[in-house]
Image (cartoon, rainbow over all chains, first blue to last red; front, side, top):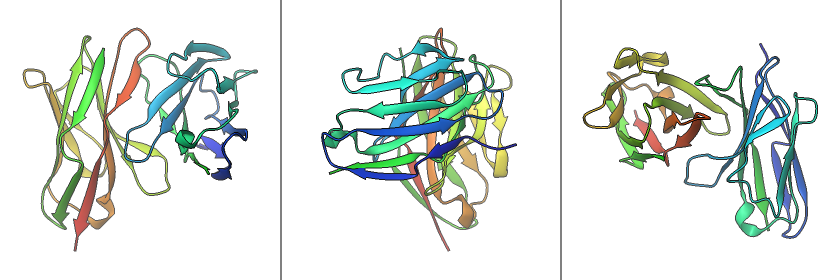
Length: 114
Length: 113
């Protein structure tokens, strides 16, 4: 069974530029999550999708971050414009269903904003 | 509301000696608790999870954890460390209506030969 795929693996941009990350969850997984992991901290949930609907985006900085999962499969997370403090690893995870299901994580995208 | 405190940011052990990574949690719900491991440049991998069944939970690679409600703790142990255990370990609590995961800050485990 293929795992969660993410691309790109690394990205370097300058502040005020825009960037997009892509995630393809495990086949058949209805729930998709985006996390931000700043160096030295644990991952923090940014947004949770159930199929193509948003379940929780309470910690997503909506003035600059957006995410979509149009067909209920893969997802894109965008930052526009980027700030220095957005430098982090962005992790995508998926689970079969929402409640108490194990989340499977992708390798992450490491973003550096200069 | 829920939170996790990992009591040690860095633990160093010798190969073949026991491992203890400490975790305390706070939750308004009956929580589910997890330990995840993160090797360098790799994704998070689930080690074990507690979901209100047996309080002693066995995971992969010889790890286990004990849920102690009276102490609000969920410490991770392994009898004998292996070099391949060197990684970052995260204690995680889940609860509430959408079972959101809240991660601790992580404990870096170093295994010395």
